Image (cartoon, rainbow, N blue to C red; front, side, top):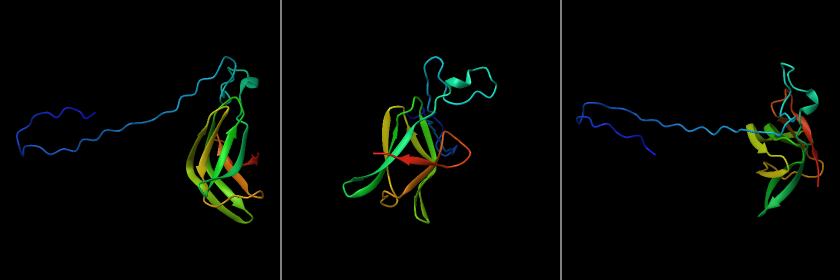
Length: 137
């Protein structure tokens, strides 16, 4: 909704009104399970959950997609994801691709039709380097 406009004399002022909205993800886990390591050492390191990701190529209405499944106990935040075929590397997304929640699957359009020898690489939950994600069924 727009903010109320104050009454002013015609021609007396000029202004630009800007309204911004942010969407901030919030993830809550059960007791003893954490989404990332505790650098202060106050939590048990064994409670750090890791996403368990697999991917597969799918076709929807004749267009190539990549479907990722997360069977782990915590969400996966995916960034800098690429599809590699031989020596070619095509970005699925530069920067943030999206999230795959625990026990869920997500699909994104692929820049090329991935095959059985394709490799999907990306950064998961802010890790330093892009790692290969295992291809599943």
